Length: 422
Image (tube, rainbow, N blue to C red):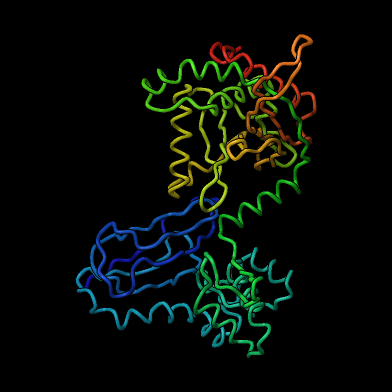
């Protein structure tokens, strides 16, 4: 018998844990080399885990919904077995493995299975849960934040039916709640409700947004831009641009270039706060907020100042496709010195974007609409876009914020400036 272990891929330093979604194979089924066995959701991306070798999935060590860390063994493949031979013994593996922390906790008081991760310990304290009352599914039986959340949800759904204390815990561990839709909690006639746990990505987005509002002195400044010059230039060169570069000339490349022009002129807009220090970045990594089926993600265009319009458009198009398919890498989502959020794609007229920490400013772009404006004493119709820039008032004064946004406005209303870097 030759056993090959299936392990969690190496996660980045900023990602401590991940959640298994749903096994695509059952124990005892044949697998081909490089066949995707399961997807692992982190707070940034969803990673695919391929089979390292062909054979039979002999044992699933961690069941659906389990919390895992880098290089943890989650399954084993028997490369010499035939399909069906290992099924009886292996089929019980997930349940036995999932129940192990409970048995260990009952047999040995104060063991590692009683140890809660910092985030889990805080959540338990906030909800009045006693140490040792939640079974852990993390490494060495440690209690993770996901374990506590599952315990709270299980307790809420079981509250109406008295049961022994150990029952909800055992149920929560033996059958971890999936990160997708849960069954309707109650039959309320024509007013049904459904309780669904947040995915790791959604929970992380919520955490970062609250962190941003709690730690930054956020203020937003607005301006309006006549998009006619950009629209005329785009219309004039669109066909040749697409033929030459194989990608459409969109508006985002203009916004990225205009933002870089402003960041060069007012470096504090490209800075971040680290304790009592201001870190001025000598590079321009622009995050582009992208909606995906799993939630909001912000992939980063590296060294945007050194890229051509075509390079920027290709990068953004690639980000959009990867976000849709869930293929963005951790590297593509890490870092960033400034962000752009384009709510105009969905028809937004005006908004106040929230800063993406640890950055200190973000540009909000909105829908371009024909509006009546006054030029030289005459009322004329122009395609107008309202720009909004939120900034951290701790390090950015109103002067730099307003003038930075004016610089973007001037660049967009005279796009030739972007070609000559003036």
